[in-house]
Length: 426
Image 1 (tube, rainbow, N blue to C red):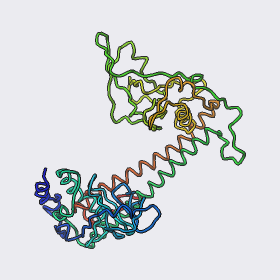
Image 2: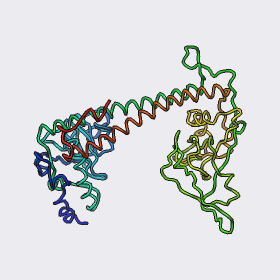
Image 3: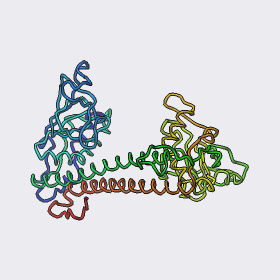
Image 4: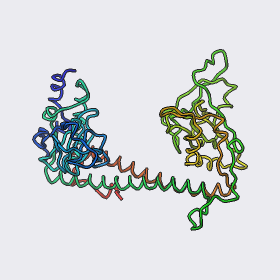
Protein backbone atom coordinates (compact mmCIF):
# COMPACT_ATOMS: atom_id res chain seq x y z
CA UNK A 1 0.00 0.00 0.00
CA UNK A 2 1.33 3.49 -0.88
CA UNK A 3 1.90 6.14 1.76
CA UNK A 4 -0.99 8.21 0.31
CA UNK A 5 -3.34 5.25 0.70
CA UNK A 6 -2.08 4.70 4.22
CA UNK A 7 -2.69 8.35 5.07
CA UNK A 8 -6.26 8.11 3.74
CA UNK A 9 -6.76 5.11 5.98
CA UNK A 10 -5.34 7.00 8.93
CA UNK A 11 -7.68 9.94 8.29
CA UNK A 12 -10.23 7.85 10.17
CA UNK A 13 -7.84 6.52 12.83
CA UNK A 14 -9.75 6.38 16.08
CA UNK A 15 -10.98 3.84 18.59
CA UNK A 16 -14.64 2.95 19.30
CA UNK A 17 -14.95 5.27 22.28
CA UNK A 18 -14.53 8.24 19.90
CA UNK A 19 -17.82 7.41 18.18
CA UNK A 20 -19.89 7.70 21.32
CA UNK A 21 -17.71 9.31 24.00
CA UNK A 22 -18.72 8.98 27.65
CA UNK A 23 -20.43 11.93 29.26
CA UNK A 24 -17.94 14.69 29.99
CA UNK A 25 -15.27 13.28 27.64
CA UNK A 26 -14.14 15.09 24.52
CA UNK A 27 -12.83 13.83 21.19
CA UNK A 28 -9.66 15.65 20.22
CA UNK A 29 -7.06 15.51 17.52
CA UNK A 30 -3.97 13.94 19.08
CA UNK A 31 -1.74 16.90 18.23
CA UNK A 32 -4.07 19.19 20.22
CA UNK A 33 -3.18 17.41 23.45
CA UNK A 34 0.47 16.57 22.82
CA UNK A 35 3.52 17.61 20.83
CA UNK A 36 5.33 14.92 18.85
CA UNK A 37 9.14 15.19 18.70
CA UNK A 38 10.47 12.76 16.10
CA UNK A 39 13.92 11.37 16.87
CA UNK A 40 16.93 12.06 14.69
CA UNK A 41 20.23 10.21 14.71
CA UNK A 42 23.23 12.38 15.61
CA UNK A 43 26.62 12.14 13.82
CA UNK A 44 28.25 8.76 14.40
CA UNK A 45 31.34 10.29 16.03
CA UNK A 46 29.25 11.80 18.85
CA UNK A 47 28.32 8.46 20.48
CA UNK A 48 30.22 7.20 23.50
CA UNK A 49 29.90 4.71 26.34
CA UNK A 50 31.55 6.93 28.97
CA UNK A 51 28.58 9.02 30.07
CA UNK A 52 29.56 12.10 28.06
CA UNK A 53 26.49 14.15 27.10
CA UNK A 54 22.91 12.85 27.22
CA UNK A 55 21.97 9.18 27.43
CA UNK A 56 21.05 8.07 23.92
CA UNK A 57 18.10 5.91 22.86
CA UNK A 58 17.75 4.57 19.32
CA UNK A 59 14.70 2.33 19.74
CA UNK A 60 12.87 0.10 22.17
CA UNK A 61 15.87 -2.19 22.75
CA UNK A 62 16.80 -0.02 25.75
CA UNK A 63 13.29 -0.07 27.24
CA UNK A 64 12.83 -1.67 30.66
CA UNK A 65 9.60 -2.07 32.63
CA UNK A 66 8.97 1.64 33.15
CA UNK A 67 12.12 3.63 32.37
CA UNK A 68 14.81 3.15 29.69
CA UNK A 69 18.24 1.71 30.44
CA UNK A 70 20.56 3.28 27.83
CA UNK A 71 23.83 1.72 26.76
CA UNK A 72 25.24 4.77 24.92
CA UNK A 73 25.54 8.54 25.41
CA UNK A 74 25.58 11.33 22.86
CA UNK A 75 27.66 14.50 23.11
CA UNK A 76 25.80 16.30 20.32
CA UNK A 77 22.10 15.34 20.39
CA UNK A 78 19.91 16.38 17.46
CA UNK A 79 16.53 15.70 19.10
CA UNK A 80 15.82 15.30 22.80
CA UNK A 81 13.13 13.95 25.07
CA UNK A 82 12.52 15.67 28.38
CA UNK A 83 11.90 14.00 31.72
CA UNK A 84 8.19 13.15 31.89
CA UNK A 85 7.76 12.68 28.13
CA UNK A 86 6.22 9.47 26.85
CA UNK A 87 8.57 7.60 24.53
CA UNK A 88 7.14 5.50 21.70
CA UNK A 89 8.86 3.27 19.18
CA UNK A 90 7.88 4.47 15.69
CA UNK A 91 9.55 1.84 13.54
CA UNK A 92 10.13 -1.92 13.60
CA UNK A 93 8.18 -2.40 15.80
CA UNK A 94 5.69 0.43 16.17
CA UNK A 95 4.02 1.14 19.47
CA UNK A 96 6.30 0.04 22.31
CA UNK A 97 5.85 2.66 25.04
CA UNK A 98 8.12 3.82 27.83
CA UNK A 99 8.54 6.85 30.08
CA UNK A 100 11.47 9.28 30.14
CA UNK A 101 12.78 9.58 33.69
CA UNK A 102 15.40 12.14 32.60
CA UNK A 103 16.43 14.01 29.45
CA UNK A 104 17.48 11.75 26.56
CA UNK A 105 18.91 12.10 23.09
CA UNK A 106 16.57 10.16 20.80
CA UNK A 107 17.33 8.57 17.44
CA UNK A 108 15.17 7.79 14.42
CA UNK A 109 13.47 4.80 15.96
CA UNK A 110 11.73 6.84 18.66
CA UNK A 111 9.42 9.79 19.15
CA UNK A 112 8.87 11.77 22.34
CA UNK A 113 5.27 12.69 23.19
CA UNK A 114 5.13 15.90 25.24
CA UNK A 115 1.74 16.29 26.89
CA UNK A 116 -0.54 19.30 26.98
CA UNK A 117 -2.83 17.04 29.03
CA UNK A 118 -1.88 15.18 32.20
CA UNK A 119 1.51 13.58 31.29
CA UNK A 120 0.92 10.55 33.51
CA UNK A 121 -2.48 9.93 31.94
CA UNK A 122 -0.96 10.33 28.48
CA UNK A 123 1.67 7.70 29.24
CA UNK A 124 -0.97 5.10 30.08
CA UNK A 125 -3.43 6.19 27.39
CA UNK A 126 -0.73 5.79 24.72
CA UNK A 127 -0.65 2.09 25.54
CA UNK A 128 -4.20 1.93 24.18
CA UNK A 129 -4.05 4.60 21.48
CA UNK A 130 -1.01 2.98 19.87
CA UNK A 131 -3.37 0.35 18.41
CA UNK A 132 -4.37 2.85 15.69
CA UNK A 133 -0.74 3.60 14.86
CA UNK A 134 0.10 -0.10 14.69
CA UNK A 135 -2.75 -0.68 12.25
CA UNK A 136 -1.62 2.02 9.85
CA UNK A 137 2.03 0.99 10.14
CA UNK A 138 1.11 -2.40 8.72
CA UNK A 139 -0.17 -0.68 5.59
CA UNK A 140 2.97 1.32 4.83
CA UNK A 141 6.02 0.25 2.84
CA UNK A 142 7.75 -0.78 6.06
CA UNK A 143 6.66 -0.90 9.67
CA UNK A 144 6.91 2.78 10.63
CA UNK A 145 4.87 5.89 11.43
CA UNK A 146 5.75 9.58 11.29
CA UNK A 147 4.56 12.83 12.86
CA UNK A 148 2.00 13.12 10.03
CA UNK A 149 0.35 9.93 11.22
CA UNK A 150 0.01 11.31 14.74
CA UNK A 151 -1.61 14.44 13.28
CA UNK A 152 -4.42 12.30 11.81
CA UNK A 153 -5.13 10.44 15.03
CA UNK A 154 -8.25 11.25 17.08
CA UNK A 155 -8.63 10.25 20.73
CA UNK A 156 -11.26 10.47 23.47
CA UNK A 157 -10.08 12.00 26.74
CA UNK A 158 -11.77 12.59 30.10
CA UNK A 159 -11.72 15.88 32.06
CA UNK A 160 -8.42 16.78 33.82
CA UNK A 161 -9.51 15.55 37.26
CA UNK A 162 -10.49 12.17 35.86
CA UNK A 163 -7.24 11.97 33.88
CA UNK A 164 -5.28 12.44 37.10
CA UNK A 165 -7.38 9.88 38.98
CA UNK A 166 -6.94 7.28 36.23
CA UNK A 167 -3.20 7.89 36.19
CA UNK A 168 -2.98 7.40 39.96
CA UNK A 169 -4.77 4.06 39.69
CA UNK A 170 -2.38 2.84 37.00
CA UNK A 171 0.61 4.12 38.97
CA UNK A 172 -0.56 2.02 41.92
CA UNK A 173 -0.96 -1.08 39.76
CA UNK A 174 2.40 -0.53 38.05
CA UNK A 175 4.11 -0.14 41.42
CA UNK A 176 2.58 -3.43 42.56
CA UNK A 177 3.72 -5.13 39.34
CA UNK A 178 7.23 -3.72 39.70
CA UNK A 179 7.58 -4.81 43.34
CA UNK A 180 6.18 -8.27 42.60
CA UNK A 181 8.47 -8.66 39.58
CA UNK A 182 11.48 -7.84 41.77
CA UNK A 183 10.26 -10.36 44.35
CA UNK A 184 9.97 -12.98 41.60
CA UNK A 185 13.53 -12.36 40.45
CA UNK A 186 14.85 -12.51 44.02
CA UNK A 187 12.92 -15.72 44.70
CA UNK A 188 14.28 -17.22 41.48
CA UNK A 189 17.87 -16.40 42.53
CA UNK A 190 17.32 -17.76 46.03
CA UNK A 191 15.68 -20.91 44.67
CA UNK A 192 18.64 -21.56 42.36
CA UNK A 193 21.15 -20.85 45.14
CA UNK A 194 19.32 -23.10 47.61
CA UNK A 195 19.10 -25.94 45.10
CA UNK A 196 22.82 -25.89 44.33
CA UNK A 197 23.82 -25.49 47.96
CA UNK A 198 21.77 -28.49 49.06
CA UNK A 199 23.09 -30.65 46.22
CA UNK A 200 26.69 -29.69 46.98
CA UNK A 201 26.68 -29.75 50.77
CA UNK A 202 23.51 -31.47 51.93
CA UNK A 203 21.16 -30.58 54.74
CA UNK A 204 23.88 -29.13 56.99
CA UNK A 205 24.53 -26.32 54.48
CA UNK A 206 24.42 -22.96 56.20
CA UNK A 207 24.91 -24.35 59.73
CA UNK A 208 28.09 -22.31 60.26
CA UNK A 209 30.57 -25.15 59.92
CA UNK A 210 33.02 -25.46 57.06
CA UNK A 211 31.04 -26.58 54.05
CA UNK A 212 31.89 -29.89 52.44
CA UNK A 213 29.97 -32.67 50.82
CA UNK A 214 28.72 -35.25 53.38
CA UNK A 215 31.13 -38.18 53.55
CA UNK A 216 28.34 -40.77 53.39
CA UNK A 217 27.06 -39.48 50.04
CA UNK A 218 28.06 -41.56 47.03
CA UNK A 219 29.07 -40.25 43.61
CA UNK A 220 27.29 -42.38 41.05
CA UNK A 221 27.01 -42.53 37.28
CA UNK A 222 23.56 -42.15 35.78
CA UNK A 223 23.71 -45.65 34.31
CA UNK A 224 24.39 -47.06 37.79
CA UNK A 225 21.12 -45.71 39.20
CA UNK A 226 18.86 -45.27 36.16
CA UNK A 227 18.13 -46.44 32.65
CA UNK A 228 18.51 -44.00 29.76
CA UNK A 229 16.21 -44.29 26.75
CA UNK A 230 16.04 -42.53 23.39
CA UNK A 231 12.82 -41.42 21.74
CA UNK A 232 11.01 -42.06 18.48
CA UNK A 233 12.49 -40.74 15.25
CA UNK A 234 10.07 -38.55 13.34
CA UNK A 235 9.25 -38.95 9.68
CA UNK A 236 9.70 -42.73 9.48
CA UNK A 237 7.56 -44.66 7.00
CA UNK A 238 5.28 -46.95 8.99
CA UNK A 239 3.09 -47.98 6.04
CA UNK A 240 2.71 -51.72 5.77
CA UNK A 241 2.81 -52.08 9.55
CA UNK A 242 0.17 -51.86 12.23
CA UNK A 243 0.54 -48.47 13.80
CA UNK A 244 -1.15 -45.98 16.11
CA UNK A 245 -1.00 -42.21 16.22
CA UNK A 246 -0.04 -40.91 19.67
CA UNK A 247 0.98 -37.61 21.27
CA UNK A 248 4.68 -37.01 21.73
CA UNK A 249 6.94 -34.43 23.39
CA UNK A 250 9.23 -32.23 21.32
CA UNK A 251 12.25 -30.26 22.53
CA UNK A 252 10.03 -27.16 22.75
CA UNK A 253 7.86 -28.95 25.31
CA UNK A 254 10.76 -29.65 27.68
CA UNK A 255 11.92 -26.46 29.35
CA UNK A 256 14.37 -25.86 32.18
CA UNK A 257 12.54 -27.10 35.26
CA UNK A 258 9.06 -27.24 33.73
CA UNK A 259 7.02 -28.45 30.80
CA UNK A 260 5.27 -26.35 28.17
CA UNK A 261 2.32 -28.45 27.03
CA UNK A 262 0.46 -25.67 25.22
CA UNK A 263 1.12 -27.33 21.82
CA UNK A 264 1.24 -31.12 21.60
CA UNK A 265 1.77 -32.89 18.27
CA UNK A 266 1.20 -36.51 17.32
CA UNK A 267 3.32 -39.13 15.57
CA UNK A 268 2.56 -42.45 13.86
CA UNK A 269 4.44 -45.29 15.48
CA UNK A 270 4.42 -49.07 15.04
CA UNK A 271 2.35 -50.81 17.69
CA UNK A 272 5.25 -53.03 18.76
CA UNK A 273 7.37 -49.90 19.50
CA UNK A 274 4.87 -48.06 21.69
CA UNK A 275 6.08 -49.50 25.00
CA UNK A 276 9.66 -48.62 24.09
CA UNK A 277 8.89 -44.92 23.66
CA UNK A 278 5.98 -44.44 26.06
CA UNK A 279 6.67 -42.19 29.04
CA UNK A 280 5.89 -43.24 32.60
CA UNK A 281 5.20 -40.95 35.56
CA UNK A 282 8.51 -40.28 37.26
CA UNK A 283 10.59 -40.28 34.08
CA UNK A 284 13.06 -37.41 33.94
CA UNK A 285 13.28 -35.77 30.52
CA UNK A 286 16.48 -34.20 29.20
CA UNK A 287 17.03 -32.46 25.86
CA UNK A 288 19.87 -33.42 23.56
CA UNK A 289 20.84 -29.88 22.62
CA UNK A 290 20.86 -27.45 19.73
CA UNK A 291 21.12 -23.87 20.94
CA UNK A 292 23.12 -23.64 24.16
CA UNK A 293 20.01 -23.11 26.26
CA UNK A 294 18.64 -26.47 25.07
CA UNK A 295 21.70 -28.47 26.12
CA UNK A 296 20.81 -30.90 28.90
CA UNK A 297 17.80 -28.99 30.14
CA UNK A 298 15.04 -31.04 31.62
CA UNK A 299 12.31 -31.73 34.11
CA UNK A 300 10.07 -34.41 35.61
CA UNK A 301 7.27 -36.12 33.68
CA UNK A 302 4.23 -36.72 35.89
CA UNK A 303 1.95 -38.42 33.40
CA UNK A 304 0.11 -35.29 32.34
CA UNK A 305 -0.91 -36.84 28.97
CA UNK A 306 -1.89 -40.52 28.69
CA UNK A 307 0.11 -42.69 26.28
CA UNK A 308 2.58 -39.90 25.53
CA UNK A 309 5.83 -40.63 23.70
CA UNK A 310 9.02 -38.60 23.32
CA UNK A 311 11.03 -37.82 20.22
CA UNK A 312 14.63 -38.86 19.67
CA UNK A 313 16.07 -35.44 20.65
CA UNK A 314 14.83 -36.01 24.19
CA UNK A 315 16.39 -38.55 26.54
CA UNK A 316 14.23 -40.34 29.07
CA UNK A 317 15.94 -41.22 32.36
CA UNK A 318 14.02 -43.82 34.38
CA UNK A 319 15.32 -44.03 37.95
CA UNK A 320 15.92 -47.18 39.97
CA UNK A 321 13.68 -46.05 42.79
CA UNK A 322 15.42 -48.31 45.29
CA UNK A 323 18.35 -45.85 45.25
CA UNK A 324 17.20 -42.72 43.40
CA UNK A 325 14.12 -40.55 43.87
CA UNK A 326 13.19 -39.26 40.38
CA UNK A 327 12.10 -35.94 41.89
CA UNK A 328 15.56 -35.54 43.37
CA UNK A 329 17.20 -36.34 40.05
CA UNK A 330 14.95 -33.83 38.27
CA UNK A 331 16.35 -31.15 40.59
CA UNK A 332 19.88 -32.40 39.87
CA UNK A 333 19.17 -31.82 36.17
CA UNK A 334 18.29 -28.18 36.95
CA UNK A 335 21.50 -27.62 38.89
CA UNK A 336 24.83 -26.07 37.96
CA UNK A 337 26.43 -29.51 38.45
CA UNK A 338 24.59 -30.83 35.42
CA UNK A 339 24.89 -27.71 33.29
CA UNK A 340 28.64 -27.55 33.92
CA UNK A 341 29.12 -31.20 33.00
CA UNK A 342 27.31 -31.01 29.67
CA UNK A 343 29.02 -27.77 28.70
CA UNK A 344 32.36 -29.55 29.23
CA UNK A 345 31.60 -32.77 27.35
CA UNK A 346 29.16 -31.63 24.64
CA UNK A 347 30.03 -31.50 20.98
CA UNK A 348 30.13 -27.78 20.23
CA UNK A 349 30.11 -25.48 17.24
CA UNK A 350 29.36 -21.76 17.09
CA UNK A 351 26.39 -21.15 19.43
CA UNK A 352 25.36 -24.82 19.15
CA UNK A 353 25.99 -27.80 21.40
CA UNK A 354 24.69 -31.35 21.65
CA UNK A 355 25.17 -34.38 23.83
CA UNK A 356 24.50 -38.10 23.35
CA UNK A 357 23.29 -41.11 25.28
CA UNK A 358 26.81 -42.21 26.20
CA UNK A 359 27.54 -38.85 27.83
CA UNK A 360 24.21 -38.86 29.66
CA UNK A 361 24.92 -42.33 31.03
CA UNK A 362 28.39 -41.27 32.14
CA UNK A 363 27.23 -38.20 34.06
CA UNK A 364 28.34 -38.48 37.69
CA UNK A 365 26.45 -36.75 40.50
CA UNK A 366 26.12 -36.97 44.31
CA UNK A 367 23.50 -39.47 45.52
CA UNK A 368 22.49 -39.16 49.19
CA UNK A 369 20.47 -41.83 50.99
CA UNK A 370 16.80 -41.87 49.95
CA UNK A 371 15.57 -40.18 53.15
CA UNK A 372 17.92 -37.25 52.56
CA UNK A 373 16.89 -37.10 48.91
CA UNK A 374 13.26 -36.85 50.02
CA UNK A 375 14.06 -34.10 52.55
CA UNK A 376 15.95 -32.09 49.91
CA UNK A 377 13.01 -32.52 47.55
CA UNK A 378 10.65 -31.19 50.26
CA UNK A 379 12.80 -28.10 50.89
CA UNK A 380 13.36 -27.25 47.23
CA UNK A 381 9.71 -27.92 46.36
CA UNK A 382 8.59 -25.49 49.07
CA UNK A 383 10.87 -22.78 47.66
CA UNK A 384 9.59 -23.42 44.16
CA UNK A 385 5.98 -23.26 45.38
CA UNK A 386 6.68 -19.83 46.83
CA UNK A 387 8.23 -18.74 43.52
CA UNK A 388 5.22 -20.02 41.57
CA UNK A 389 2.91 -18.14 43.92
CA UNK A 390 4.73 -14.89 43.27
CA UNK A 391 4.69 -15.56 39.52
CA UNK A 392 0.92 -16.12 39.65
CA UNK A 393 0.50 -12.88 41.56
CA UNK A 394 2.54 -10.99 38.97
CA UNK A 395 0.48 -12.48 36.15
CA UNK A 396 -2.77 -11.60 37.96
CA UNK A 397 -1.62 -7.99 38.36
CA UNK A 398 -0.76 -7.77 34.67
CA UNK A 399 -4.21 -9.13 33.79
CA UNK A 400 -5.76 -6.59 36.16
CA UNK A 401 -3.90 -3.80 34.39
CA UNK A 402 -5.14 -4.97 31.00
CA UNK A 403 -8.70 -5.09 32.31
CA UNK A 404 -8.39 -1.58 33.72
CA UNK A 405 -6.96 -0.40 30.40
CA UNK A 406 -10.11 -1.60 28.65
CA UNK A 407 -12.44 -0.14 31.26
CA UNK A 408 -10.90 3.14 32.43
CA UNK A 409 -9.40 4.36 29.15
CA UNK A 410 -12.68 3.87 27.30
CA UNK A 411 -14.95 5.32 29.97
CA UNK A 412 -16.73 1.99 30.33
CA UNK A 413 -16.03 2.29 34.05
CA UNK A 414 -15.77 5.77 35.50
CA UNK A 415 -13.36 6.45 38.33
CA UNK A 416 -16.15 7.57 40.65
CA UNK A 417 -17.86 4.20 40.17
CA UNK A 418 -14.74 2.07 40.63
CA UNK A 419 -14.53 0.10 43.84
CA UNK A 420 -10.77 0.12 44.37
CA UNK A 421 -11.04 -2.33 47.26
CA UNK A 422 -12.33 -4.91 44.79
CA UNK A 423 -9.05 -4.83 42.86
CA UNK A 424 -7.28 -6.29 45.91
CA UNK A 425 -3.86 -4.81 45.16
CA UNK A 426 -1.65 -5.87 48.01
